[in-house]
Structure formats: structure tokens, C-alpha cells
Image (tube, helix red, strand yellow):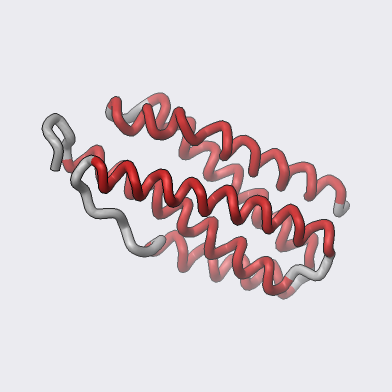
Length: 146
């Protein structure tokens, strides 16, 4: 690893990466189930935005000499299970579940801005506006679908 980069730095970044990978899995699954075309368009935009964040996080971990997580781990499995249940009840439930996931993601980013190592804060700071954007899109979509 690069000098002055700790294992904790990479671990925190991998935690963020796992959350983004979980979001990708959940959006992908929702895109297969949701039928409303307005919703599909928003889901595609959010999926692409999370994909770009994954690329940014992976790139930064590699730059620091770390090894990026390859999957979302337990959170991804949980997200798949929850999304599977939500999509069984229709588009509104799936959108509500995705919006809750965006809430959690935003909380995770804010926590890293408050309590993490400098390189992690820098990374979270560079990505939080995109997270706020996907959170806002899902919140608005949820309100539209009521």
C-alpha cells in the first residue's frame, strides 16, 4: 500500500464500495421487475450513477495499493432478499425499498464525512453530491407513484 495509507483506510473505502455494489444489485433486480416506464427511466439513471461511483471507489482503492471488494457481501444478500420481497408486491413497494436504500447510503456517506480518515473523507466528499442526487430522484419518484 502507498505510504501513509492504513488498512483501515482501504477497509472504510471497501465498506463504501460494498454499499454501492449492493445498490447496483438492487437496482438491477428492480429494473427486471418494475413495469412503470417513468420509474424504469429513473431507475436506469440511478443505476448508472451508482455504477460510476463504483468505478471511482475502485480506482481510488487501487491507486492507494489496496484490493477492492469484489462483491457486496452480506449487505448485498440482504438487499436482494428485501428487494425480492418488495418487487413481489409491485412497483410502489420496490420504489419505496429503493428509496430506503438511498436513505441508508446517504447516512453512510455523511458518517464518513464526520468520522473517517482523511483519504476516506476526501473520497466521500467527492461522491456525496451524486448520492444526494440519486436519493432525491428516488424520493421524488416515490412521491409521484403514491
